[in-house]
Amino acid sequence: MLKNSEHRDLFPGALEIMILQSLRLRPMHGYALVKHIKQVSDDLLRVEEGSLYPALQRMLKEGWLESVCPQRGVPPGFIG
Image (cartoon, rainbow, N blue to C red; front, side, top):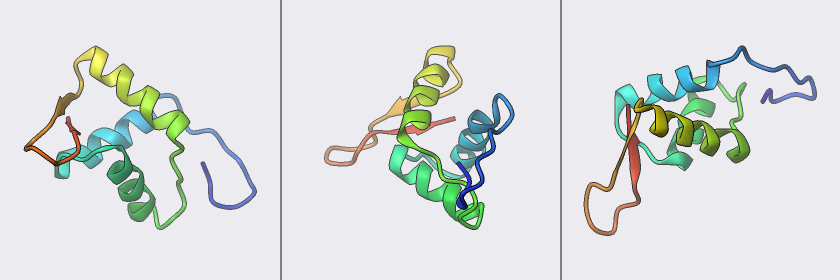
């Protein structure tokens, strides 16, 4: 998850906090969340799909997020 060769795990729940903080700004789909977290961390954090999508599914199941499809032809997104 770090950009250099040094690898450190974040504390439990860190990804979920980053997702919720990002979704406070606007609804986003998975790819936009990855880009947003990378941008606001000045490229320090890279969220992999293998981490993001299971976290989103857990958060949906717990009721922390809602999945939305705002209009026809727009990819579904998530709101926190």
